[in-house]
Length: 347
Image (cartoon, rainbow, N blue to C red):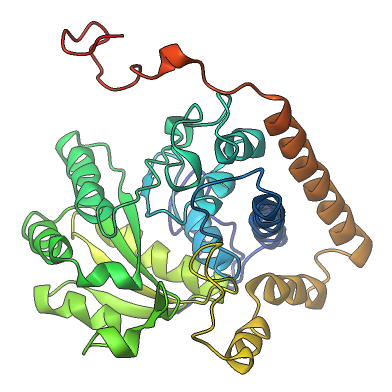
């Protein structure tokens, strides 16, 4: 389904031609956005191997289209929430790579002041509300954010991402019921990369077409090719239009794939090399690059210049993180309660 040039009406929505095709500006924006996610995380993986980044670290490599397509379909005022695979979203929304890298280093200049690390990235300035470590814990929170938007009559919505493993959590079903009952402006997204940690969907769920879970609640639901950024944009744009019209939530199942293991400690021996190669041949960034070249939107030299700029930004973020200080001891009891003089918190 092709989108029209006046849909969605968003400050940062993708530019579309009269024929319903995406513009040169949009394709170049997607390319730069997705390359930043990819190169940043490739560097993060290297740094983790050098033990400069510690703790848990879940990479998004391979799934970049899921975020890029959604960003161009929504507005800067919409809210975003996800689980612990959360580096790509803030980068795409405009958070400084310096702040994200510093957070991975647990430095005070990080976007969560070095207190969250890889799994708890937050940036209020771009409406990114985490970064949540409890599997499925962000799902009811996403509905709560949407309730606030509806209550305050802002016209904004919340997009709530989850992995395929989170759909087995009971809170999801409670949330789906309330979201439909109250017609909340929320887009629920299942990023189905085939494995909940190392367990395939087929081994853990009787329902393997996960979008069908929404049908029990009469929630509009559909599967989406998560390796095609255009398909992601169109599906999110349709869901956003429904949400803003007061028609309630949508469930989208992005069928995607992660090239790395569940986390940096996962060797991913539960899948074959042939399976991995099959998905690498559908790489979302290469797909966008091909579209750019076929439409003469940019030359190889111009794309190389974008790549060089991103490499420089990533290298700068590493230098920034390494030169930043760790949080001081007096930060331990800060940012716990909104009330700064809360009487039950003592240094």
